[in-house]
Image (cartoon, rainbow, N blue to C red):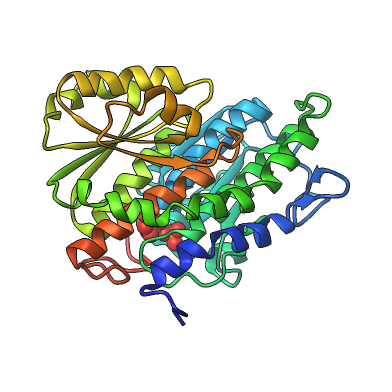
Length: 364
Ligand code: F6R
């Protein structure tokens, strides 16, 4: 049931602190300050390459994971959407890890890609939310998310739970490959353990986001910009908005703006900039200022320090709790979900059952 929420999507957005905590319980040993896998003896030490394949929102979770696998485990990562992967001629050395991410575990293209990777002698890992699904059954390493059933067609809580599992997998791989510095595993566990409270902190801005949704609701086109792991978040924000509000939206890597999309900027195109304070903040802010110099209306999503430093000329700001960069993708998922939700409600669209979309895409 929707409980006292108006839509399943809103209920599922609000469940995130609890279901992320629930998911993390299977992957963190809080007392020992260690990350674990559901199959603790599963040996990742010989993995030399990771191939990540998924569709839609699950693909964006995979994109975040690519940054983490490279950063922590120092393994090369190949990443593709399933519909492309299965029809190109991907080169996979035997013994690689092929990782499939899917809420439903039934998406036709992702399942076909999994079977192709199996025929190429890859170890098959799957991150799925439905433990009885086809992908779960065909996995060597089953990595469940514990988001519970997701009813809203637009994926929300499944995404943040996928990120939680993928962060833990990256840390497990890094340890298996001897790439963690002393104390690093402990720090990763501590940061991940802060995610549920940080998600609650992000949800506290729901009303503020609702109040500024009008900036976006009247627009015909919207751009989302982010850098590093906020780039996939920009893509996810744009996907959520177009799915449920039918407003045309695109996500770009902040640094790509000047290579084309900047031509779109005028006072009618809101630009949502996702920029937590941190090592990439100044770079993204300089891209943001290029937008402002051309009359663009910027909505800055950052933390208090970021808003203090760069919020001045923005049409609206959304303040998030200050969090470690590792959990920022989970936390910043909340404002992009809520923004899409409130814009859709303002426009009167069918939030839980958007036109032309199905929850599970079992045909290619
Ligand atoms: C977006 C959305 C879709 C799914 C995609 C993959 O809100 O829900 O983009 O993420 O169809 O579905 P799964 O994860 O079930 O493979």
